Image 1 (spheres, rainbow, N blue to C red):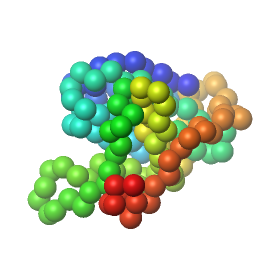
Image 2 (image 1 turned 120 degrees about the horizontal axis):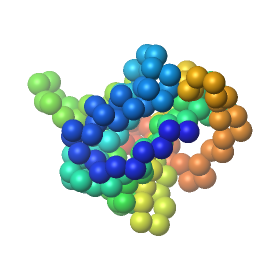
Image 3 (image 1 turned 60 degrees about the vertical axis):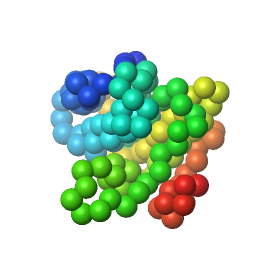
Length: 151
């Protein structure tokens, strides 16, 4: 499993994308990199630069790769909005919805984890996928309507 603890800063996002790609063998993994970038970018935009995060990437054992980003704000839930034409912001969760098979939020004491799973069993060379990996217990799966309503 890839795991990185860092402060969410704009300059760290490309470094993180490269580290994830290297961990996954250096081959193309654009959906995984996009998910990492968008979730960490949301932390920067909505919680502020310098927020501590933990980023994890692992295989699920089911032909998918799971991305998780944990931050210290359990009450700040992601909400999908409809970006107007020409707006620079408001498309991150729509991008996650487009590339992921499923996504959700798990809240815990003093933290939340935003996660998504993409097709493709990306795994570092020479290591088996994380077979038998456990599903998080309190995943909140949302639909576009629930996100728009703030559920």
